[in-house]
Amino acid sequence: MQRWQELEDVPTGWPRSVVTIGVFDGVHRGHRITIGRAVEHAQRLGVPAVVITFDPHPTEVVRPGTHPPMLCTLDHRVELLGSLGIEAVCVLPFTRELAAKTPEQFAHDVLADRLHAVQVVVGENFRFGNRAAGDTQTLAELGATLGFEVDPVPLVAGTGGVWSSTYTRALIAAGDVEQAAVSLGRPHRVEGVVVHGNKRGRELGFPTANIATTPHPAIPADGIYAAWVVRHPYTPLEQRMPAALSIGTNPQFDGVERRVEAYVLDRDDLDLYGEHLAVDVVARVRPTLKFTTVEALVAQMHEDVAEIRDHLR
Image (cartoon, rainbow, N blue to C red):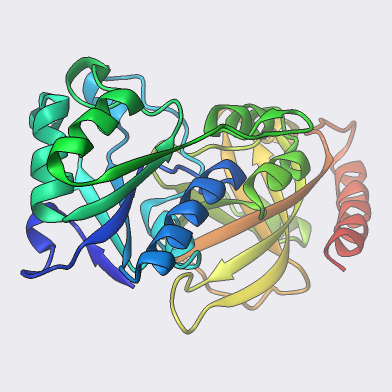
């Protein structure tokens, strides 16, 4: 799969293609239906399927300070898109200049002139252009002039509501990572670099990796979780290890800073400082609690690890 960081990276002579457009944060099951439709059209027409996505999130440019919690990093998003049969991902830098383009300019400059779209697949609620002036009807009218057809895909609901990034973020914020996994089609992932902490976990017999998360992460509610720690994500060296994940302020020691800390089960020999880790969050075991004694906390941690083994088994 090809990854382009801007329109200028599109190779000269790129053929006609089927294009789908969206932030696609999380690449959840609703997104996958739209992307799957694009891949089907591309296979039928014998042309490549291309995703246009954006970085940073458009809301941060249009309304600074309103950046939503992200369901996945850009690297993870691109990897997920590639797994669905997409042949190229174009990551458009979302700038004020791009936001200022009219629907006509976006359709001409991006879809027709650079990607030579023959078909454009979008969700039925798709909006584009300056002040979101364009919708699917606008896109279809422009396509009739510019040489592409438009396929608007209806929104699809699961048992708890429409599969959307907003719905999934709400589940994660509530700590319901198992239902979030249903929406995502995979466990929710948190990423970041391991930094030095207070080293209390090591003193208690459970050495943890203190993870400084990537910007604007969707962090589950405070609690103890069953998880998989992934070393060297998105590389051939990827390694998955079972882990207990703690999210919270560490009330046992009157902490105030909210932290994400992972204990890799049965491993006290790992030196992870400076590594970029991914953590796939599987299930919530319990809320964060303050115990009467440190000994009571340690006893509970042993119980947590036993329960986490069952979840991951």
